[in-house]
Image (cartoon, rainbow, N blue to C red; front, side):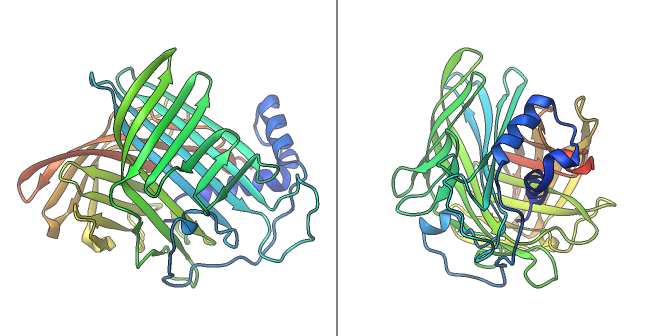
Length: 387
């Protein structure tokens, strides 16, 4: 789904004129970003657009699609130690193309590129109520950042990386300021094609859509380090891979996105494209993945999201929803969702809330639990809104 358009907007703004824009960056941060983006090509086009269902081949289609303007690989997960200490993590790689296919002169320098990469890494210490968030920007050149699909998938920004280590196995690594994850992921269900066979509509205009692939149940083991201690952890992770050349439609101000892994072996993804009055946009949708891996697409009419509480950030002042009831009536599914900790706001170059959540509910009257991640955008001002 097109839930990271704001991120791509920011990257383009940085690429085409950070210094001239006079953004409110600290001098050191400004210098680092300017150095990272020095010598990049200016934006161009045209780009490819998602115009209908496509055939996918893996691992090739886990990799980059540079004919499209925007792309991301989004990993989130809930982890725990044997003695019950809980953690959540996010590791995300964003790609933004500055030039469309065949645009611009051939670059001969090893530093020349038409691609910019951004990465976010967070760790939620649930048991201690601490949240750590980091970001990196890098050009897609000289081995500093990039992605590939074959012979095995990988994506990286500096030494933050995801790499495929087997047919269904992947490794994640990120480290910053004493916070580190080294995780091994095993895909238990295989790629899930969201929307119509991977074609995910975002609006009525031709090409206002994305190609959207998920891995919804990634068995996860490994280690993490924080506060000078190492922890052996296990749990479940989720991956979203999406690429497009489109944007949110008129009248939409953000999105509320849920990825939920339930104890009966099923998963639920729903998102609300949000209007200014808080009501859902027409192309809000979702997917129910059953324990056997079969998939049921959900339209806006098939599910509901009720907000039952709010939280105000002490950092940005943004007021976020902080308790929900998600229902899929004709599946007999009612889920009550709460953050595992309140403050999981990424207050970086742009501001959004993305955090680990706990799920309690019922399916056809039988108790059902689980965990997941929620992303909330458009509730707080970001750098991209300070021009």
